[in-house]
Length: 75
Image 1 (cartoon, helix red, strand yellow):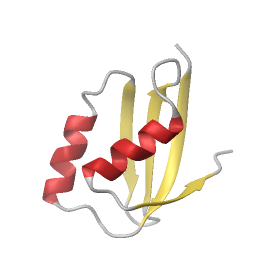
Image 2 (cartoon, rainbow, N blue to C red):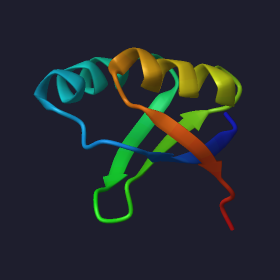
Image 3 (cartoon, one colour):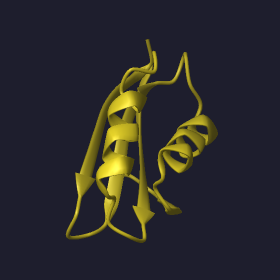
Image 4 (tube, rainbow, N blue to C red):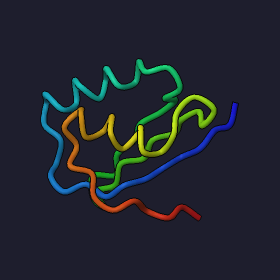
């Protein structure tokens, strides 16, 4: 297993419907953790890179209703 983390800025605060969709996203095999920094408007997703790729993560977030913006470089 190759564990990676990706982070994105998002525009608007997720509502109840979006949060329910994200809960379902946690059931996707390979997604380990989803965290939000509401102050900075950053969503982070930890995932298994042997199962999923970064564009798939962005797509899953968009499908859940997160208005994904710029990908952030993690140090």
